[in-house]
Length: 251
Ligand code: PEP
Image (tube, rainbow, N blue to C red; front, side):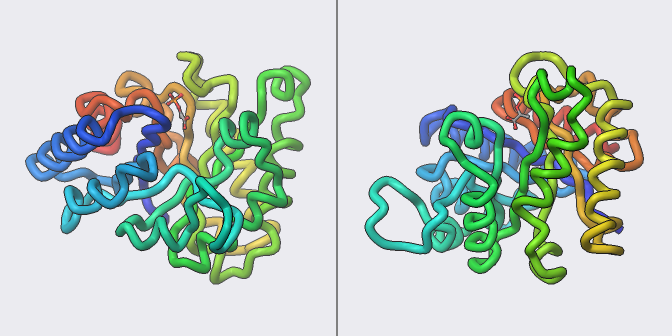
């Protein structure tokens, strides 16, 4: 049975004190009302070690939003997968469309990052998704299929077992425009088919999350689809009540 997951992506929001306050509030909310899914928060690097202490021995998993494509050494300002792991984090988001678009992360760079993250014992939340022009041209399957193949298809079955996928149509991220539940299901089924073609039965076990303006009011509808295993949540992960509302969509 594949896991249901709701993961938050805080992006470059919240200072350390605000981040600790949000994690503390979420911890209390989920202790009082246990979730029916795995819950992960992905925070800026500087929050990780402190938030790791807050969420220790709770149902909340912790992840980074990125890691370096180099193992270690003279790469000023970078943070390695090993350093992420040493904070107590268990996950890392890779391939987010903002990293691809603003920081020039190519499929090759992402392949390096994925390998290093897995080698250091992190689970990877790997993001894929088309931009608006690609969807309007009917090219979304081609684009997403290539993103999967170019960065993940050289993994072994054992490595792939630690991958979580997040389908995030770029036109729906932070725009208030959500894919319809049907659009999400169509793409998730396509993705699962691509994974089946390369990794066989692992396709049934890989969790595929939807991301893009997911909120308490639309999460239940989207999560009700058979190939949608949860969500990667941006804006709505910054308020405990909203994030908890999405987690509760699994109830
Ligand atoms: C994201 O950036 O991963 C995301 C899904 O953002 P939002 O929920 O704000 O659209």
